[in-house]
Image (cartoon, rainbow, N blue to C red; front, top):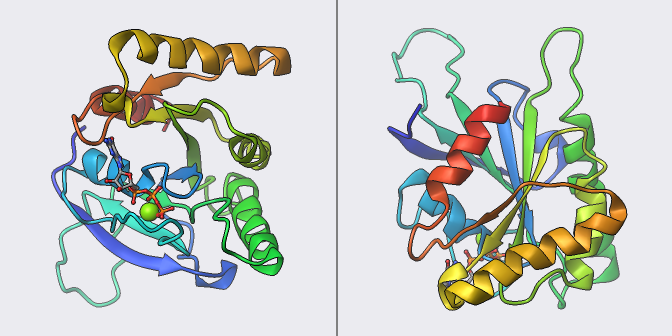
Length: 215
Ligand code: GTP
Ligand code: MG
């Protein structure tokens, strides 16, 4: 399967604003400024579909991107589902937000990754996988650990994408991957780890094959 077309379909700032369960969803989470929007653009083969910025905390809601949206046939009320949604979760741990905003983030994202990954009697679980982004230069920070604790509440499979790998030497990249595995081992976690660069398009094919495999 390949990305023929992609489209921003909407931002959900609250639970009530989420679209009704439909096509499978893959969520992307990470510290603010880790490179989520850039990686989504690289996956979707688009330059600025997801807005990127040097200002952390720009993405405040759950942003839904449709992969291969169904052609608009203009019929009356027919449900048109894309093949898949990529969901950009709001950035975590942005220093300038209040305690209250942080708690609201935790409630919304925590609920999304758990409840949305549970099947209902009338439909399968929409959330099929969670990709956690970690900056390859910094290793696992305290904020990444806090976020991972939230993500691991999800029954959906979990993958770690190391971002901005273009900023590292080949040797440092291998060390970054080994560092993640070493960090996770005491928790008994064996998560797949993919080195990525939105800038150089590194790891994009690998990430897609993992996504299609777990869907
Ligand atoms: P928020 O939405 O604010 O939480 O940030 P984000 O995680 O979506 O990060 P975004 O994609 O906006 O990127 C943040 C900064 O990192 C921007 O200045 C990007 O240009 C830069 N960046 C992102 N990906 C890469 C990459 O692969 N390589 C390099 N060198 N820079 C990158
Ligand atoms: Mg963003």
